[in-house]
Length: 414
Image (cartoon, rainbow, N blue to C red; front, side, top):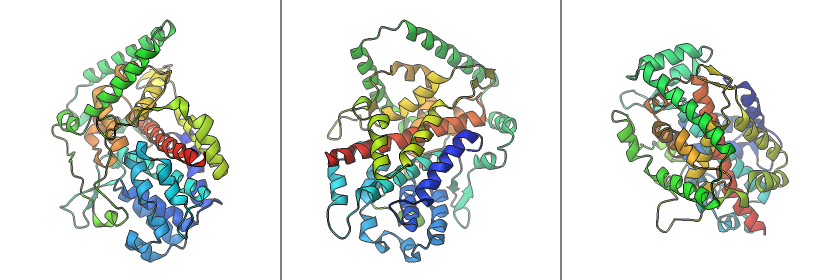
């Protein structure tokens, strides 16, 4: 993240606040909730970090033996942790009522909002960790079962030197530089055309809705089958092995993302962003129940959404607004959130297939991300630009989870 210092400051401020500053939850509980959240994606990097912090802040060591050793009250978070991580559109006010109902294990609303913010933060951070290759990858041939995934050798060591990263990454692939230069020019051309078209656009509301539904349905066909097709030699596996050091912190490990757009009993109505927005609804609810965190999250969302250096690979003075918006809105589209004023035709024009596979994997199945996926999209772009993409995906995911949870809390209150 230090490749994007402005963003990093904003990220650290909000993370410090939710873990260390005055708040409804005791310090050890905050770290335990972070562990529970990271465990949904088997993110041992984050789990290990918060196991240490949990003990340092006075947490009871026995809790680290697994969920059956923690108070019932914390265990009651399992359901909302699972739904938020994989299918947030299923969260209802009944889930909220169950947690805050009177009784010895009940949660106050401020405590619950604090917990929800932590869960969403760590689910999304797991996406960033896997997307940037920071998590150790399992290797049965090694005694402790872990080796650092190859991509992390450039994530940590070569941060200061973007070019060497880019050269090694490109040299190791079978793709010609000429190919990827062509891709870059074509993408810039499409961006330019979209900006020009927008000025004399007369798309009807019905057409906009149709384009969203089309994109939503098409997202169904991206991953997991697509991954094997797009990366025939990839090490992507359908069954990610859940190790004991992770499984002790979760229940129902097989529960995962399911395309909400799939027809059938779970086909829920689209979440119209205008009906419940972060700016008008979520922000004030969070601030009211857990003071100041709303301001910090808002600053972080705005920072990542507006962050730009006006460059694309080797080109300067480029307006990347359309591209940033397409990335953010595509993540929300996969979670069923639709913006009435956005033309989802842009997503199709700007995000190539291999990038869509990458986005969906990082956002919905982060533990399955491979270095091959990371290398295969936007091959001319620098490492720091791809990290920028990961920051956008992370924040879009966090905001989507929060919108569903906060909407359910609002409905419980009304």
